[in-house]
Figure 1: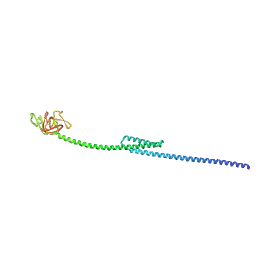
Figure 2: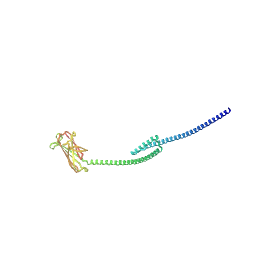
Figure 3: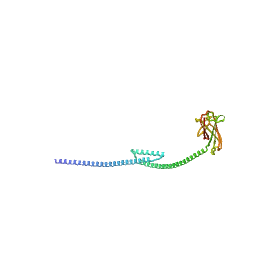
Figure 4: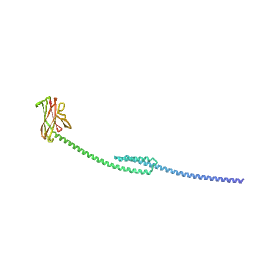
Length: 303
């Protein structure tokens, strides 16, 4: 019995040792697993933190680039020029910059490529700024030259207008000075057999005689004098509606005309009108014209 009991104790001891070994194996495995997991978690944390840093860096870079592109847009808005071709180029660059800003939000963001684009855009804008400055300088020079030309034109125009005024004044003075004058107008109203009358129903002929005074600057040679006799009702006596001459740019009717030879000295002249109609009683007005100008006037009355 004692021997059996000892053997049982020995077996129990072996079982305990076996269990203890298993426990230690499990403990070691668990410790190893914990260590591996801890290492993996640590590495995962580092990778996550690195990824977060990269994301933050990328977002920051995007915002910086976006801010720079927006600043470029504002600078393009401030560029002013009167050159239509340059304005088209500026608008095209603005559209391209807006496209780049839109592309920043896509997954196709490439730092190197975009940095190169931004650098190119900076250089292009510098080139445009230089060109616009040159254009503005040229335009300013042209404006100054244009202002000087306009000032010279105004001065020349003023001188021209002054000369034209002087010329007009001189022409008017010469025209006035060269105008002939008919004075001492004597009107005879005749009836049959050459006797004078004052009765309208007896008039057969109207004689108008006058002196044309000397004028050294008037035209010499053949001189046609026109006479107009207006009735009390302002109707002009005339043998034909085709009896016309020019006065102040218009053609008007004359009663009678006669051509004389004028040699710039005082001469006596007479013009006759043969009456072929029944006249009205009242005041008749007589005007004498030469070279398109009125040179004398008078009147007579009939009963």
